[in-house]
Every structure is written in structure tokens, then in C-alpha cells.
Length: 82
Image (tube, rainbow, N blue to C red; front, side, top):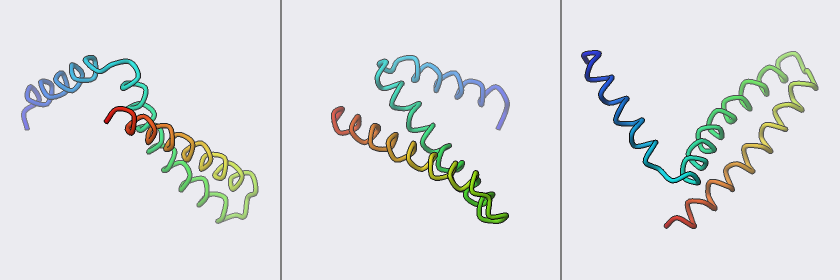
């Protein structure tokens, strides 16, 4: 795909993001953060289970609790928007 077409698509996505209301932007950012947190859970759990490091295992549990709370926040937001 030509670079100019990719740039036009990126500008369209940015324009769509700017058109969202503030609480929709927060929900979108929270959803993205939840996905990244899920990746962090897997990585930290693997790093903790391989050498049996309690620090990484506790960190993975902490990230899991954060992701669960963020998931419920996003779920509650999507329920109120509909």
C-alpha cells in the first residue's frame, strides 16, 4: 500500500478519535490499556513461573486485578452508551 494512502487512513482515524466525546476517549484508552495489561500478565507470569520468582508472580496477580477492574469499567461504559 502506498505511504500516502496509509497516511490518509491514519489521519482519518485521528479525526474520528478527535470527534469522540471525552468519556468515550477514556473508555477507548482504558480498553487499549486492558489489552496491553493482558499481555503483561502473560509475560510476567511466564517470567515468574520459569525461575519460580515470587516477585514476578505477585506482579502478574497485581496486573490481573488491574485488568479485571478496567474490564468491568469498560463493560459498564458500553452498557450505559447503548
